[in-house]
Image (cartoon, rainbow, N blue to C red; front, side, top):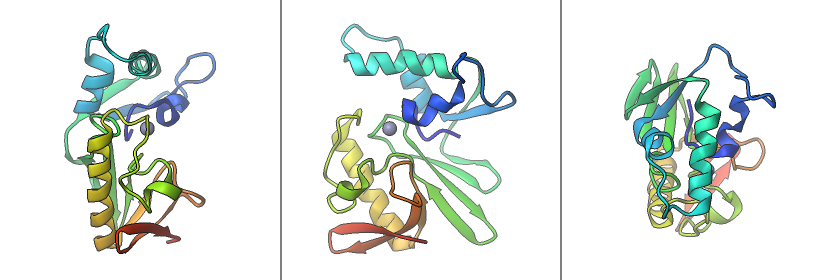
Length: 175
Ligand SMILES: [Zn+2]
């Protein structure tokens, strides 16, 4: 289950020889994310970084079966919600079991030390940085209200914790 198609989240799918690392796996990718990076015709007007990532993601996912998913529960206890901005189909995965839950939030924050304190701070890797900032604000407010445990690829060790809010600032405390 991929949060989005950026190489630091998908590069591990293939080994150095270009073979599948997970031979029996099927990839779950939001249909909007797949449409943008995998299906769309690359335009001459696309910025180089964007066109390059399209090509790279097509190579990385090509050997796999892909299930293009929509928002909602895709497997028992595992729910996808599109949180667009960082990428068009950037997806959060809420995993629930036995009364506990954790939100796998991908790149809702990319530079945790800055963007938790200042959610409006943007990053060049965002496809739509205004939308990414608005999404970040919304997810942080919700996660803090729910006292949700979150896990992200760019959160400091141990990589997960509970979102706390103080005024306009947020922080992640060890769970
Ligand atoms: Zn990313």
